[in-house]
Image 1 (cartoon, rainbow, N blue to C red):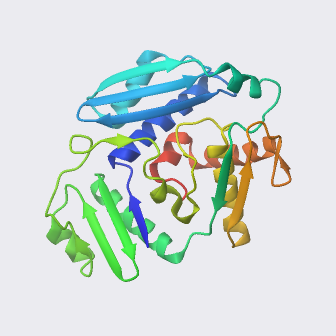
Image 2 (image 1 turned 120 degrees about the vertical axis):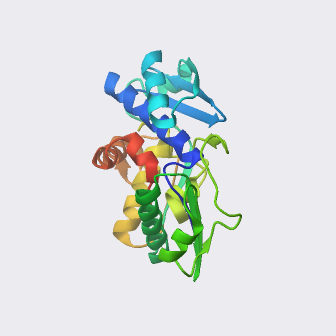
Image 3 (image 1 turned 60 degrees about the vertical axis):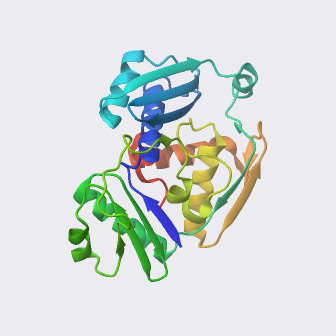
Length: 260
């Protein structure tokens, strides 16, 4: 049983904005410290950033407009907490406490993800999809139900009828769709809007990659300040996650679909 949302779902719009701001921070500093929370809906985008690098207000506005359209941008930035900043001052050390789990992606999850990608390539609009055994549920905005039925005749399509989605209908918040992004690998940590020193990003990615390679679930835990996880220097965990993000195309691109 798996649920997938596409990059135009309001929650993913929030994730994409957060990811783009992290990309911006990395374009200004080699190792920025940043954590971004985004809440968007009904014409307003609220952003709170704890950051070591000053993001130009006009650049923030350009990112929001490019991803979300004509909405009011309310951006508030504060410095990172001094104790948290000191933790990373001399070397790359674990940026948070956490429990992390990587689980191999199932055939069912891969199949639903391919359906979500296909529908998004066709409609480029808000959509949500569920696959549970033989039961496929497709909720696709700005699409005619009869057209969707032609391609997926066995699916339950738009149960309330044709609809228009997006941030004028619903709100979006950062890291609210981790089930879509991580499937069975979900634990407590958020995946988007944070630099690579944060274990929510680096260790989540590392555990997921290891699970795909090994073919069985991986469970890890860490404490803030740790210099080693899973028998590896934390700096190496960060490097592995960095290489993955770069190969993906950056934090914004990663936020579009997540790990699944």
